[in-house]
Image (cartoon, rainbow, N blue to C red; front, top):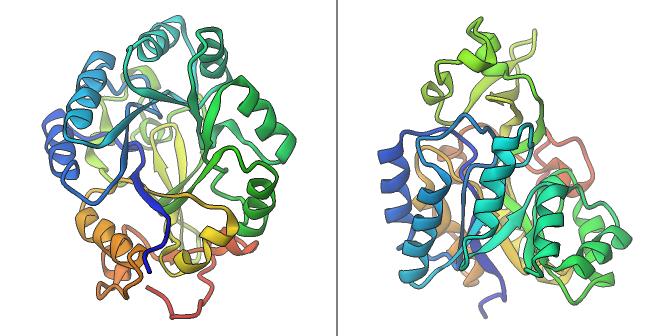
Length: 301
């Protein structure tokens, strides 16, 4: 029997050329997804698509029969960032994912419902109840939260949907400093948009040559690719309503199809380890270090 889980596409965390972004979403609108998140979450300098372009793209996605959600920037640093945020919130149609307390404040002022994004760092039931009172309809737990913690918080808040990060390099931290620019010995304000050269981020290794982290402009990510594919059967019992797939440069259509197949109660034939941008991991979900891949009932993807 199919599981009552939605499959959704998270916001694009990397910096891709405009034409590539448009082609990506034109293709993604035909995938077995119920919801697509759009917008620049990471860096205000990434403006090949501006706020109005994201709003127009959201309208196109909605016209295709999918729900479009506009994701706000997670680290606000200037008045220009606030102007873009206000324009995003005042789009008039699409739901907004709030990734900053300032976004929550503006949405609450306007009486608008929203998605409480993973960057709000909701770690307990009381905090989630607060955001629910402010207008949150759905929440995305922090990526390092264990499945047991998600279950407890979701059980205490049955009136709000829970959406978990189920695939992709984990977004771990943000900084006002641009790590990619520093790698190239450039100033942040003169970065020459070097992120365009790294469509899945830039992998960093330890001195022992083990892939450890990835840098994505001002964002630090995991080098490993988090996967909950083989956890799917247990997720509804943990209070999970939706699985978030994070965009990557290649093979994402096959990844989405594998998750859709698993949600339908069938065994995917695809070996996701061959499609991931890094080694598969799932440690955080099991309350272990995030770099760990814990064996599950049907083996590893």
